[in-house]
Image 1 (cartoon, rainbow, N blue to C red):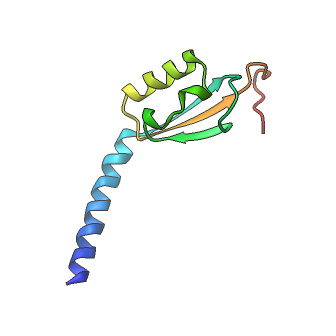
Image 2: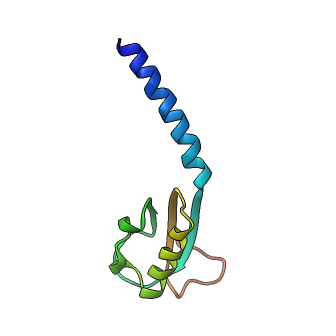
Length: 89
């Protein structure tokens, strides 16, 4: 009876994939000189965000993003001295 159980799992995963994709992905570029963290981070919840790696203002921006209920948020953190149009590699 393992095969019918696997079939049910595939149907459930397919339905949840549709629901997850409806919420969308948000990408945001934040100018922040706070030490720590990666230049590019992926978060699925505001609870995943370490607030010590962002300024208070940028953390508030991230909290506002999550009010819209995205599936995940991609954060690109750049120094405040970055020239316009040039992102660090």
